[in-house]
Amino acid sequence: MKRAILFFASCFTILSGFAQDRAVQIQVIQNDKIVIPQNGIVELEKKPFKIEIRLTNLEGVYLYSAFADSIYRLKIDEPIPNFKDLPAMAMAETEFNTDQEMIIQNESWSYWFYDKKMSWHRFDKNSIKQDGENITATKTIKQFYLPEEESKKTLKIENITTPLYLFFVTIEHDKKGNAAKELERYKLMINWR
Image 1: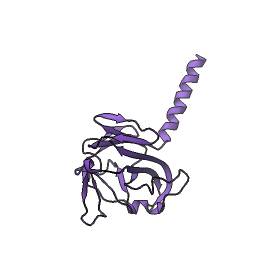
Image 2: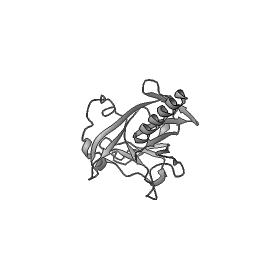
Image 3: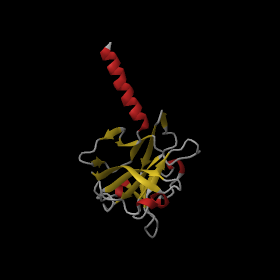
Image 4: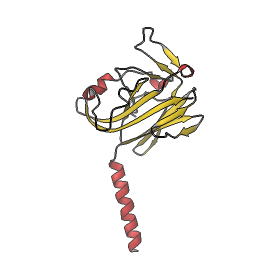
């Protein structure tokens, strides 16, 4: 009986603590299989892939994606440049990811979020799954949009020749909507084969 009470108390403590946590989990999927990073590096074929985001007690995650590693190489204790202005630097993307693309820009970020009060989001249209405080959503990537190029060109995955650097960060917003505190960061480098 004592063991049963202790076990129940332990489970309750874990679940109570978990309910208050805010976290993000990120997976890369290609050919319907999760691709496991090795030392933060994911090896992908030069064809479409998906990024699956699981948000726990969070509305969204910011993403800096680039073919250069300037932000990616930040150490865990180094501040993100212009951190407070992060929300203002987020670029608009198509609703429901109709273009199935990722924006690559040196001065801007993407904000992938889900708010059940809104009639749209940045993920694939029917990919949202809710489980208590958890939201899982998927974004399919078939191409990259480079708005800084003169022609604002689109680059197909099969034409990529350099690694792709992804830097995800979750934040706490202040009352004005500015970035107040960094919660978690996650980095991935994608190599192509």
